[in-house]
Length: 270
Image 1: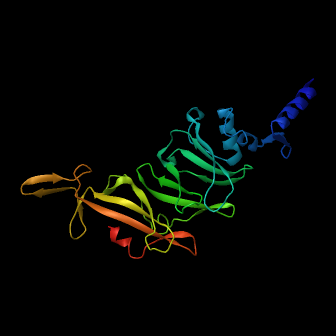
Image 2: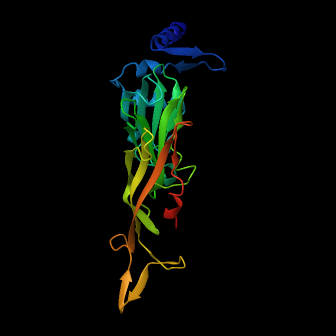
Image 3: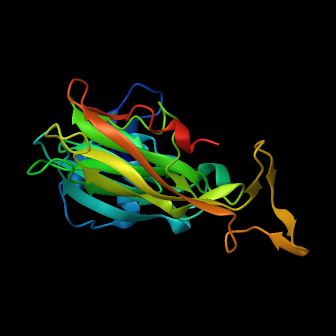
């Protein structure tokens, strides 16, 4: 009877897309996650879906399973390819500050191959070039509110970040951290425009730097000063100064990347 039970168990797992793996002393099973992906757009069993997702793609969270959920399960296209992809967001709700934003986005091919795992605070699909597939834009940020953007296209079988601001030029386009300054809005607005009139759209991040401390001519920062006998304390609600900013990145036809406009970035550094 025991042998029959084992055989029936193996057959049941095979029907569900699992394969017997005998490379270890104790037999284990590897399941084909594409079966669950092909159930799109319905997730029939969320707990099973999440478990398979984590196991198949080695996704790790630092909190228990009770807060887990799938917030996005879509079929999408991205600039650089006419193929469709699955885009899945797994959100586990809360965790340590170092693990913020406590969620992952996975881009998968239609046959379940992993293209990339992201950990974005926010994402969007933005159309930069008319009548073309959108780029994938994500916001990467710390729990304190410091961060920037990445903009992706499909290049061969991978995701390629084509925006050079955050890593190459160290331009922060998200700032909610109330130290010396913040941005208004905290995540700068994205502007799409052909700035150099070459027939290709460029991008810019636009807003204001809000100085919440004063600054002397020698570059010394302070948060309180006396003016005509009155004590003035600077803060978000009473800023020292607001400075309009526009970080412009021009499209480079040779590389397909958005590169900083010459002599346009340094003037905003303190």
